[in-house]
Every structure is written in C-alpha cells, then in structure tokens.
Length: 556
Ligand SMILES: Cc1cc2nc3c(=O)[nH]c(=O)nc-3n(C[C@H](O)[C@H](O)[C@H](O)COP(=O)(O)OP(=O)(O)OC[C@H]3O[C@@H](n4cnc5c(N)ncnc54)[C@H](O)[C@@H]3O)c2cc1C
Ligand code: SF4
Image (cartoon, rainbow, N blue to C red):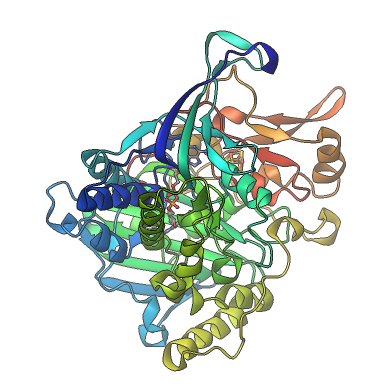
C-alpha cells in the first residue's frame, strides 16, 4: 500500500515530545518556563496515543512530591491540585498461605518510609500537568500515536510521524483514510513510559544500551475499589510479599487508601519468572483472598481495572540517554526505584533535567546534534542518588529468592544508607526476562481457583472496567513475526504462556479442525507491553494501534 499514499504534511517545532506522562509533560513545562524566564520563543508539542492525557497512565500510586514541588512550586495551594491524601502509615506484610506477619517498621531502611508522600492517581496528576502545560503555551495532541521515527540522511533523528488513520485490516486504505503527520523538530524527546515502541527503535539504532546491563521489567495488575467507609483508612500504605508467589518468583502486592473511600490494590510480578503456567492476573486475584487483606473489600465495589509493565533494571540498566537529535526521559530511560516502587518523581526530575540541557542547546542555535551534557549529568543528580543506593536489591532478589534475597537487599540498603557503600559492588541482572521461562516439561503446572465474582474476577469482566476500545477493522497491532515459530516453540514447548501473562486475555490457542490456531483478540489490549517483553522468542512486536484507542483509565 505504501506506493500510492499521498505525501504526509509536515509541521516544524523546536521540540517534539512523544508521550504525555509525567516525564514528557515535565519536559514541555520546563522548556516553556525557561523560555518565559529568558524571553525566548520556543515551540513545544506533545503527542499522546491515549484519547486524552492520562487515559493510558496506570500506576500505584504513592508519589514522592519532590518533582512536582520543584516543577510547579505552587501546586499544593492550587484549587485544582490532583493529590489530596498524605501518607499517614506504612505497613509491610510477609504473607504465608493462611497467616502473615507484619514486619516492624524499625527494620525498614529510611528510604522505604513514605512519610511526606501523597497517595493518588498518577493519571490525574498527568491531567493536571497537561492543563498547566497548555496554560504555558505547550501544544498537546491527544489521540495521536507517534508511529515512526524520522531520521535524516546523516542518521540524525529529526522528528516523528503520527500513524495513519483509517487503514483496513489487510492494510488497505479505507474510505475514511487519513495520512499521518510529520512533526519535525530540532530535538525529539522520547517519554513513552515502560517499553516504548519508538524508544526501542532508537535504543537499537544508536546502540544506547551498549555496555549497560539488560533492562528488567515487572507487570503490575491493578484494581480500584470503592470500599465501605468503616473499611477505609485514608493515608494507609500497605505492601506485602510472599504468598501466593513461590519463593523463587519475585513480586508483591500494594494497597493504598486515598480520597473518598477509594482503595488502589494491585500486584507486581517480576517478569523473570520461570514457570510458563504462572499467571500474574490470577496471582493478583488470589492475594485479595488472604485473611490479612480480604476484609478491606467486604461490601465494597470494584470500579476500575488495568495493567502496565514497570521498569526494574535500575541504575545498571539505564541506557545512554542522548543521541543525535534527541533524548530519553522518565521510564523510557528506566528511572524507577524498584524497592520503593516509585518512578513518577524521577520522571518529572528527568524531564526537567533534559529540558534544561536542551534549552541551552537551543539557545546556542544548535539542532539535531547530541546533547551529551544531559547524559553526563544525570548520575550526579537526585535521580542518580536515588537509583544507585538500591541498585543491588533487584539482582539479590532474583538470585536468592524472596526470603533470603529480600533480607540481603534490606541489609544492603542499610549499608549504603549508613556507610554510603555496598559490599556487593554493582551486581548484574543475569538473563533478560524473555530468556527466563522453562519448558512446560521442566515445571509443575500451577492451577488457579475459579473466580467468585465478588472478590475475585475473570479477565474479560476486568477488561470491561478499563474502558478499552480498538476498532476491529485495522491491522493487528500485535505482530507475530513468525507464526510457525510461535506454534513450534511458544505453544509446543512452553504451553502458550501468552495466554496467562497477558492480563487482558488477548492471546488464545484455540483447538480447531486443522489443529491448534493462535487467536489474537487485539481489541482487548490494555497496552501493558508484557507480550513485547516476555515472549520467549521475542517473536511478538507491540506497535501502536490507531491513535486514541486502548484503555481509558479513570482515577488510575
Ligand atoms: C503497576 C505500577 C505501579 C507503580 N507504582 C508507582 C508508585 O506508587 N509511585 C511512583 O512514583 N511510581 C510508580 N510506578 C512507576 C510510575 O508509574 C512511572 O515511573 C511513571 O509513570 C513514568 O512516567 P513516564 O512519563 O515516563 O511514563 P508514563 O507515565 O508511562 O507515560 C507515558 C505516556 O506516553 C504515551 N505514549 C507511549 N508511547 C507513545 C507513542 N508512541 N505515541 C504517543 N504517546 C505514547 C503513553 O500513552 C503515556 O501516556 C508504578 C508503575 C506501575 C506500572
Ligand atoms: S496484548 Fe500484550 S500489551 Fe496488550 S494487554 Fe496483552 S500482554 Fe499487554
């Protein structure tokens, strides 16, 4: 079809930002603030694949306000402020199948304390930042997915193109076909969050991860509940580890009480798990039934559902951040502090840092070159400090399992906090997540209880609560490169793990007359990116569907 397409229209900007999350919006806001302070004229545009800012953002979220305080110092006094509940209490639980243990807070390194943090919806924080950005003159285009990186003859990034709209399932233009747009820029900032599709492309093109460790990921599955007032403890932050996961699989639950009788509950599974019959979704459903947890939900109503990958590689996995024509910020750069399960503060701080370096380059009349000063700076900032001191927690957990690994990780955090030094140096992560699965023949299959429809649910009724929508007549945005390999390996050797790791029930192996067939229910995809990460052969590519589709998360 490429041959008869009309040429794309193009628009020129100083900076194009891909992704209206906290990182992208902080970049845009800081650029416009600097322009206003220095009397410069600077055009900044942000493209967002969700139907509105915040529609695709899913997070816990306990938010360290350090980033917001610095970017928008007046936000706490704003009528429109997105965060109202301050943390009042931290609880850490270790769960066994029937009982559990509350760990005394005195054992917790100080950096794990949530004192001074806020509980809320990161999607709503992004919506608020979007309004503030527009008030500063940033142009935001929600409903437009950046689908292609534009590169000039010299190999420099010169912008992005948004995807074509109105393309039929077989790739033919439909009657409502609209060509994508070229957004050209002196600098392009990738702020796509975890496992961005264009970020992957630039990381590969410029070998940004050369000499760095593999990136690691987890999958977070979340529900939002409206609970009975007598079950609501505003400001309570509760984390658990242990049951229902086996000792050699990492992860745990969170439960955050906030606003008017809202409880955010979720479960993260580290994606280096080995058993292909493990289902992160079902593990999450099970944890809600634990006696130390279940009371909260009695008489309550589940009102939201979603899932999203989280970055877990940390300090040693951060790729080079700058390249000719652009840079990476936020989760695209991997700035999540894993033991704190927090990345939104670093998303904002990294957006600001990138903006400051880009602004100086723009002021000097530069364009399309590498702003290497940003890469050179980050390790000496709060972001570097935040990530460096916890750099061994994840590798220790992966290597020694939950019991010993978490204890060692805790001791390591104490050491780095008190002595500024780790006995482990900087540990490596081992294999990338997609290489960790064992064949079905080497594991004991896990069976899960059926959902009761009150406390535990199935995937389809869950996806319904994510308001996910994709037009069916469009090319499937989950591209299986080699269908034969998928059958031979994913199905025959690993027993179809995509049926279990996908939290939206997108993948099914269906028995039919001609044998087994791989069915992809792409319309249910909640854009968590797990298939792109965990497929054992890296045989599935997630590419953006038409802009404006996917989940519409509210208060998530
Ligand atoms: C389950 C879970 C729990 C978490 N809990 C916490 C917590 O409690 N506290 C905390 O601080 N952090 C938490 N985090 C981490 C935090 O959510 C991230 O660090 C933060 O969202 C990163 O911000 P970002 O702007 O880099 O990316 P995101 O918030 O992911 O935003 C990226 C945006 O880019 C858009 N986008 C992506 N690709 C394209 C494209 N090609 N074209 C156009 N738009 C695109 C997306 O739709 C999205 O809106 C959690 C993460 C997860 C997954
Ligand atoms: S298809 Fe892939 S990206 Fe979509 S919900 Fe399933 S695992 Fe996540």
